[in-house]
Image (tube, rainbow, N blue to C red; front, side, top):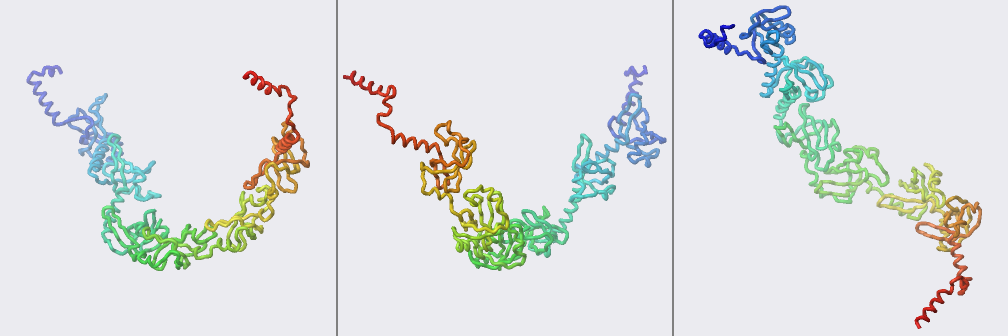
Length: 576
């Protein structure tokens, strides 16, 4: 090696030139893919020759099995490998056939992604969130999300596993070396091409026969045409009359004729109309008048009413609230059926909104009008209890289909309302008094206690400070419970109103049954409120005694009673 130290000698310079020229022909760099020539094949290894290397690298036969090249190797053939290290710590060359194939496969995927081209692959296995797809050309593995397998939900994808088919590359992560593909995009593209050919068959103005209602949304109804394409009829193109939702007019599976009114070749959409197949019925609106009775045909029944049509095809809604005067929570299908011809009165015609409102109940006698004529307020009428709740009874009045409202407070003047309610049950016949009829609100209020004499009338000739005699019925810590003589009402004399002297204001002084006097401290006929007080009675009696029996000289014998007079006399003398 000493002969190469001196590079100035002609021999050494010539050797350097030869060496550099040879290396320039074979640029060997780590991390590059190079083609090696197979020189020897054993049971475990394949030896390859790469020009420019000082030794022959070897490839494990198992690597070739993994990438499917074991059966294709022969001495003298070329084999691409990745040159990982020119020389490791043992002085050997490290190469990899698997990595070379993966890198070259990645280059192909990158090019297909950049050129927006599809690739051939096959689903090899399922995984969480999707499936694993193998690239046919390179064997590279890619991920296909479950949402990208098909353009419609699939319960089972077993028939797709192992089948070679096209995929579109939708995402590449060059740093991580991951690829995401889509089968759905290919399927949708194919369908789009087919759909474009189908749309070419139609033109604006065509009449489509027997299109089938497939589904609807808030903005329109979808129809299937010839089992090959779906078209949309917008909400405004369904009818000349106002339609809130397609399900008011159509049922799934029905057949209807359509008119093509628009074709969008970019979005591949066909717009159709049903109303344009007929003349605008609102041209005949002048033939109808508000308040007049007309025959209408029931075309469709919903939970909230019936869609009906007039003679000229005018569509209108008979709302459930306009079907009966008395029934609540009406179920329209229990009153009418499709095809029925019924009488209705037009209540509104709105030309701007193209809306007609009708009422069936206006063709019938208003039972509240009849009730007010036969049984005006103050009349007595019989009825049957139909239902009850925690505060009232509902009474079906005589032969009228009207429920009167009987509040618990109108059951009795004296007894507890809650206890009174418990005395009645559904089906009981009772006689009540009509207290109020609200024809506009369709409400009737009746009462039971009003049939008898009002015990509060006992106080009609009484006023505040009048003295009455009462009987003590019971006593407790709150005071005395008393009843006036010949009166059914019971009142409470509160503890602080029993006596003027607080030491005498003890309810325990009374055991019940005593007959005592008390004064009326409050009397309100509107609120039906009365307050009694023994204390007030004592105060009134004391005031009367003082005014009746006292003297002008009373109190003269008290100390200092004349002091003020003497002081005044002294002041007058000083002034003089």
